[in-house]
Image (cartoon, rainbow, N blue to C red; front, side, top):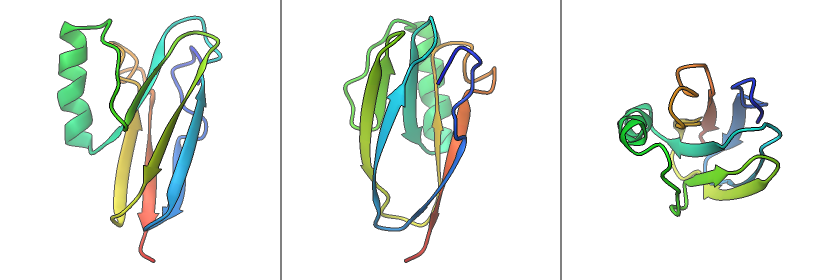
Length: 106
């Protein structure tokens, strides 16, 4: 991730039951984060982040990353379908900092 407000790659394909270790590096000059969830969950949390923009995360599906640092999320994709990910620092999601994990059936 960088200050270009994009995840690279922005689309990932995995198989149901697969466990993935996301190693997320912030090559930018400002704080970013990665959140995994449904579109609804991400949009709900985005509203919370607008009220509390300096919120730090300690949940297994979220990581906040300072400039020049890296973080990890280890996640098992138990259901087929789409899992979204995004940076919910105010303004970043709106600028396009989001992506999708397509989970195919076993």
